[in-house]
Image 1 (cartoon, helix red, strand yellow):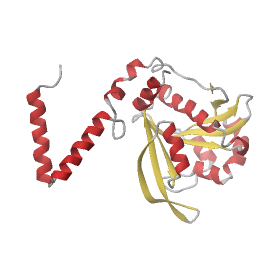
Image 2: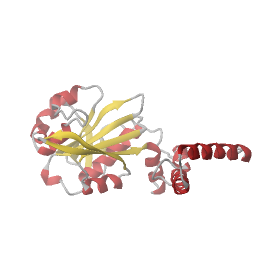
Image 3: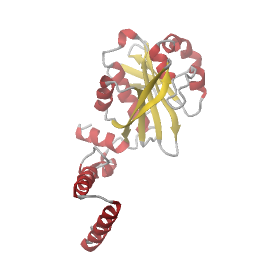
Image 4: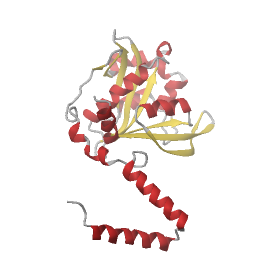
Length: 244
């Protein structure tokens, strides 16, 4: 049964009194109503009813995906420091590698050993199907209690950039995060508002949460930090709509 009409009306009146007391004018009230409807009916400002109830429909919801993971063109295997450290050494000494290791909170450039040793970080090595290493993926600051972690990606092999391999690997890594690590939220942070990166992340289901202005100082310059996130239910809805 739904909420009784009288209860809905009473709650609505309470909301209305509060916004009037706050100082909402007619234009503000209409804006408020539109924002509220957006939160209920669309995925732009919150989760929809479909998103909140779709998890039971997903046949893979409770499946545990173990490393290595494999798609048509790439594979992701567990990062083994003793085996892979030398492989990635060349990658992390590039501007892209330094960005991969940069703390968005402290602006400190972390060392690869520091990242590897942290219990809250999980790394995966991206390879081609023939096991040629091409890059790294990571979940940093994995918060088990809150069910969230920061995603990082680095395609270190320059000849493999611009071919969609990083996106393909990221799709596998996202599945691993939701299905095996039990994440509720995957977020990422990038310096500045690079349109290409925004479009790529949006194609994977991420949405912009906000921009922190001049948040990070890197190479003697201040940079905005753009934060985007993907919620588990949003991801499941997308999979359901694609028939996967």
